[in-house]
Image (tube, rainbow, N blue to C red; front, side, top):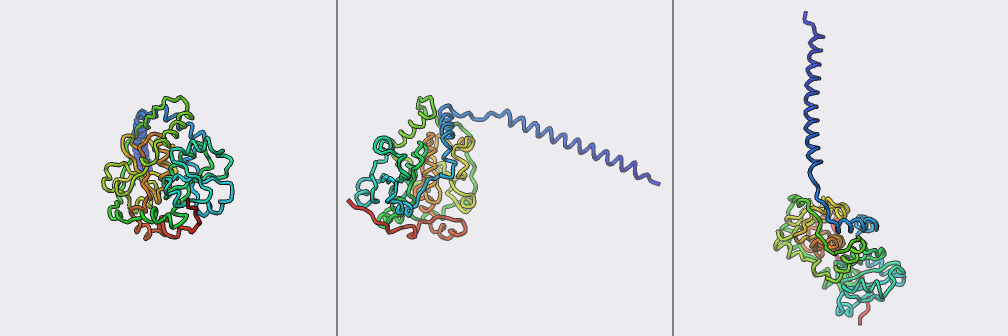
Length: 347
């Protein structure tokens, strides 16, 4: 008769030894891999960028708050016209004279910080609303002002295009297009290798001083270098490091060739993410409408990145696709439904 129990004991013991041997090998491999990761040096952030990051975080980390981006609808502005608000119109004099909101004050873009410092008491207002032609410039300006500490500043969504059709015809309605939607791709593109932040070289020794110097410099430089058109990007996509600043499902439905997806709410102020944005390339950010990317562009330019927002966002190159997928992907195509018939003043 065959003795079953000793054989079973032998097989069980062999299996146990084999298991221990395998798990031990795996554990050693994991320990080796872990030790490699631990000794791989991380890119050190330069001193001024580190101070600026610390200061912005201490101020409340606006870029990752629910108030980012700080947009206000034209309808809300209209309802509050008789309230405690100040409207700053950054369009040129000719456009302002052609028509502006009652009570609005025209201020050149480069003069906005001085206007807030010397001509009004900003915190006496419930809201300070920045308006422009289409909402692209005002988004950029409002972001800089919020980062500077003005927590009651907003950009009016759609700009004057949302106020009255008189203004929309030469701004939003003239710039929606489907010209490049056939050139979109669905391929995933990887982020660039980590590197240091741009070196600001302000010579300042505190984060607050660096912040104020950078804000002043960006307003003095104007806004033209912070904007780029879709035609320029599609003409030579390889010239830019393009950031798709939107949801994953929207990215997967089709994006600009070479575009890398960066998560809204998970990029700005996060060192490991920002270090994958090249410091020696032109960086283009785009979103649905150009509003969110305008706010994000201001943040990156504050740190010295050569960042630009693609004006009018997806509306500028894939409008028909946005209309077709509006319900399934929550696109925001600009339509005449966004245009109000509010009164305006002409000089």
